[in-house]
Structure formats: structure tokens, C-alpha cells
Length: 82
Image (tube, rainbow, N blue to C red):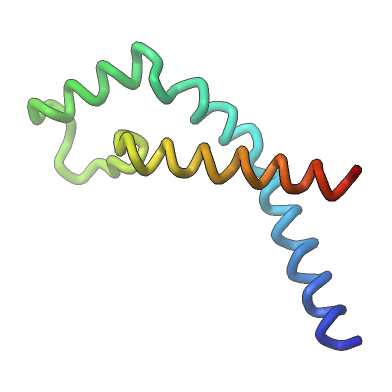
């Protein structure tokens, strides 16, 4: 019982956190592959962006993998609801 209670608590907290970032996820989906993203990527390639700027969002593989994982997670959650 204790193990199940802990797992349920942790899953509930994780789902709350995942629900809280859905607007960010939608914004990332909209930005990725947009003309703004393409311009930012090109600017980064030629060194026009500040050196201390985080560039994770410009990582093609990183963003693609994250969006794919988020989509799979949403499908998994939806499947569990059925």
C-alpha cells in the first residue's frame, strides 16, 4: 500500500506539472519550424546571437525529440482515460 500511495502521489504531482506547461508546449510547437525559428537559427549559425544565450530551442533534434515525447505522453494519458 505504501509503495502504491507514493507512486500515486508522484504521478499526480508529475501530471500537475505537465498540465501546467501545456501553454509553453503549444508555444514551442508553434515556434519550431516557423519563420521566426528559421531566422533565429540562421542568426545563431553566423554568430549574431549573444554567446551566453541558451540555445536549446534551436536544437533541431532536441526540440523534435521533446515534441515527439510529449505527443507520445499525451496519447498514453488519453489511452489510460479510455
